[in-house]
Structures are given as C-alpha cells and as structure tokens.
Length: 151
Image (cartoon, rainbow, N blue to C red; front, side, top):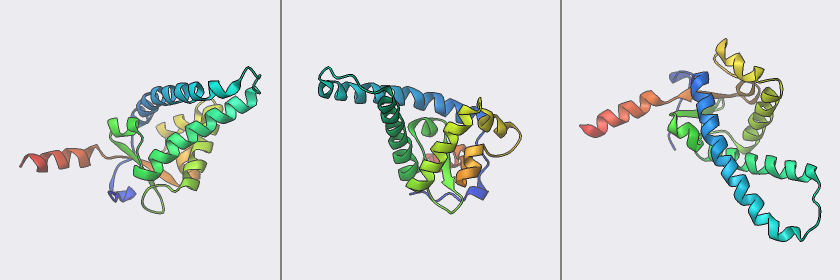
C-alpha cells in the first residue's frame, strides 16, 4: 500500500475526475450486464418489482466502487488517469467512508451535477467534502517512478 499524504499532492482536475467516471461507467455497465444475466435463470417468469432492480444496481455500483476505493484508493478508470482517493484520516477510505462518498456523489448528480461543478471553484467536490476524502493527482509520482526505473 502506497501511503500518499494528501497535502503533498495537488487535487485532481475536474476533467480527470470526469474522464475516470466515464471509463468506470463502461466497466460498471458491463458488470451490471453480467450480474443481470446471472439473475435471469432465477427469475422463472415472475415479474420483478422495478424498485428491487434499482436497489440491485445501486448495490452492484457500491460494491464496485467500495472494493476499489477501499483496497487501493483507485478504480480502473482512476488508475488510467493517475488519480487516487485518500481519506483525510490517512490511507484509503474505509467501507463506511466509501458508502458516504458514493451517497453524496449520487446526491451531487441529482442536483444536476452541481456537486461536481463545485470543483471548478474549490479544490474539492461536495462528496469529497462530506466524506472527508480528497482526489489527488499522482501523475508526478508515476513520472518520478518511471525516471528512477530507467536509471
């Protein structure tokens, strides 16, 4: 586990965060597609309440983000864009912090994305602030590691 002190790295730009979200949304779509495919044989022609389907989708999304954020502070999209989530308490976010972050991220989206656009004026989004996390840009770390590997 790499230990990034959040105050030693710049905040990730809104562009990088949104680009990572697009990348991750493609992965989540594929995961949901497979998860739904697995549940179809158990359906047996019974109509399923749409609310249960939405809850199922939210649980799958939470597990996706929670697993990656808790284990390494990065989803695959974040890894591609060299950004990482760190907790204000140090280290990677706990499962409870991941839940708070995801809840407030959905709230930010429900407010027409205002929680994300807030990043244009402040070094954090709403869900960063409420979950006490920070998305940092670790591209300088990757560049430093690459230059030391070559020598």
